[in-house]
Length: 174
Image (spheres, rainbow, N blue to C red):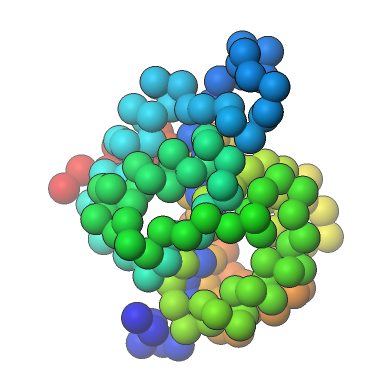
């Protein structure tokens, strides 16, 4: 669905609280899961997103378990599972220029949620806002921000509308 104003709404969602690396028994960090508390907080935050009246045409997520599980929670609350796609473009350390090219080519006229990791999401946020250093912005685990973009491109093209912590999202009442 295209916005009436012609702007793409791009939501950036950092994955919820995951097991600490030291507490994870596996060898492959991509398999590190959310904690039970992280799942609970994300479910509360996703219900807050729904009560805010947010909507998105696509949910694109890192295939890492912690991001995928976060995206699954949001997709379940929004009953939007068929528009959930996993993409290597959101893995930690992925080429952000390629991600931006993908968004411009395939999702320019859609509202999209990206579910990923730090510091990549803050770096992407800084890139799209035209901020030189990603040190200017930091996304907490489970935080969500909204960018308005008239035309997706690498470099300054977005306006930050808001950024909310999972606690703030969980406090939204009907």
